[in-house]
Image (cartoon, rainbow, N blue to C red; front, side, top):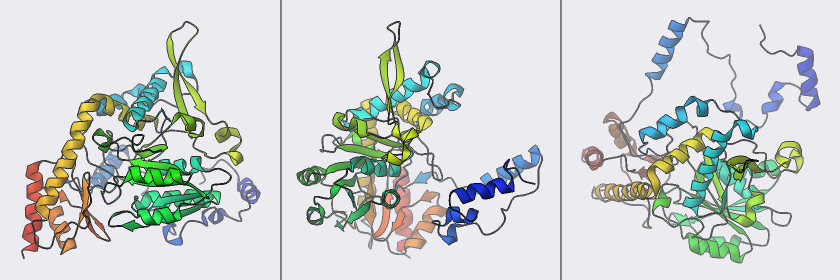
Length: 437
């Protein structure tokens, strides 16, 4: 039985209209190994009781680690109870796109507050209502920086691999070029960057801290990029902004990043939140929505969708971006988190992250065979060598500890404010015990 309302002939007509012989043609860019070549493994219809038991059995397969020493783009921070409670209120949880402003004042205000706080932590003048995740925010920023003469995007090889791949995919879709600037000693190779900056370069993207946890020389990078007439896009960990200089202070033209650390628990792939902010002169290049504050006919404060690029809706072939939505519920969560923590709370969380990461690194490197791979300054992530890597990580798992993330250079460790000194000492003792055998 078919649950698709169109007839077979209508489907053939639609496929022909887009130049496809069959449905497989619609997925020709997807690698063959990623395609499903068998029927879905779905059971026959079940009762509510049976479904509940089946789902509980599936959920029981999940492993929840009491101690997490892994980051690499998703971070285990403490989430205050109010941050979980408010976004679950039905007026927010079930809200739809706020096109009708007079019916959507609560949602619009929550987005406005989110935008305001993103501007405060990044130092920028204007923020959009969010995009899908940090990687798409980087790709959207690269797109907004291009013009007719400058079409090439540079990105540091020290950026998160998923971000590099997402920007590359966007460039492929628009026919533009992406060039990757190499890494030296865990950070962007500034000499290579100087050589690669030319008249065709639209922007350069670097992550701070970078994928290896290292702190980049962003102010020097900003000077090099601007001297070449290009725009500087800085990806930022929002928690680190509690103690590090803001992107604006570092000379960035556009600030982007992954908002997951701002009150969103670790999930298998999301939902995540991409934040974007820029200077006033680039406001009209910013993709997506911008919520603004105004007054109604009674002179009372109210909120509206003040800017959204019309081309994104009706002239798509001329659009620099096709982002037409935003992560409203995640943006609300981030806003509640930032409001709850406040400047001092964010600073305290960042300080604890940094202190505990440095303590973990110090204790690990006391063990023979474990050394820091890179010697530069870092925030809450660092890379070490690790003999018997698989055996050590398995022993940590058996002890209820999710160890560092394996990378080509060794293991990428992370410590947040959530992990205690006792837990760190226990992890170090497990590593020491395995390597002593």
